[in-house]
Length: 395
Image 1 (cartoon, rainbow, N blue to C red):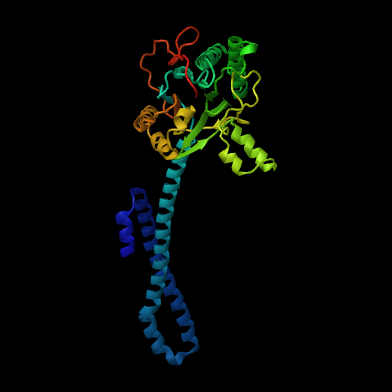
Image 2 (image 1 turned 30 degrees about the vertical axis):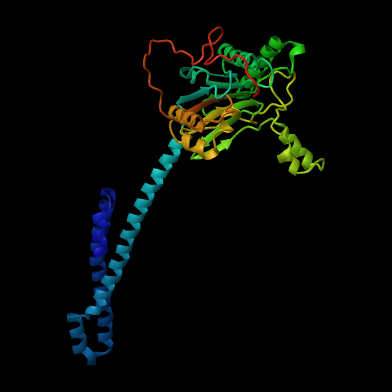
């Protein structure tokens, strides 16, 4: 009874109601069992009295006052079993409540992405000029068209890398705004990549290939699907549940050195010591691309995920733990934290750095003015991108 009272005291209203019901049932069952045991004992003793008359007085005495141990034992066993049933029932109720809570939490995490918050950082660093360029499409169009983010890092070691990066971003954003009904992620990204290539080829002309260039990363979010295209060494990462995962593969000479080492063409040590290891093996402006990276199918994202596109000026200056710590905050705040970290290090050779953070949410974005036409973060066509490029020294 002390255990039963404790359960009633600490249980929820639902659990208390269930326990009270079982207790009432237990009381009725105990009374019924007591009567049944008494009747059984009486019948057995009566039969024994018929066959043993000499014990008549003893039997009569037994019938009038049966030994207490018989009924007490039966009652105790019944009460113990029913009390056990009470405990098990309360435990099951609590387990079901916990399971329901976990299920609800999992459903929320696996729910639909209804809005996206954007964090942006774009700085010149210690360079004389800014060669990075980026754009993000209008987030209010995400349900109809999806969201597109693009980052291009002009190659400072080549002339006019700023012009190439800007041409890429403008071509991609204009193309995205002009596309008809959404097709597949892959078709959209390949069409935009082709458009960026055509724009740069027209800018450079055949004689200008490999004399200047830029990396290119695009991230396209439509519904709960995220896909990307990557050319060069800029990075695309997914931040989920406190973990940072790089999604794309960098197109650098180190990877070819690694292949050569595996094939026995050079030493494994050369993979990590060759000074040309960070050199690009594929970039926009080289003419025909050598490599392009994209997933086989869209990555399923969920509310709470953050997707980050960044130039090498960020990941070469910030450690993974610093980046992870910053991304634990809302998108806009995370961008400012990363900016502060890089600025605080005050590297004398700090590269231009650009990052775009897309934070997925299950909540609808607030409508500030339902009658106003939404504006893109970076208007298409003749308007300026976030920060126009110029020319710069080596990347």
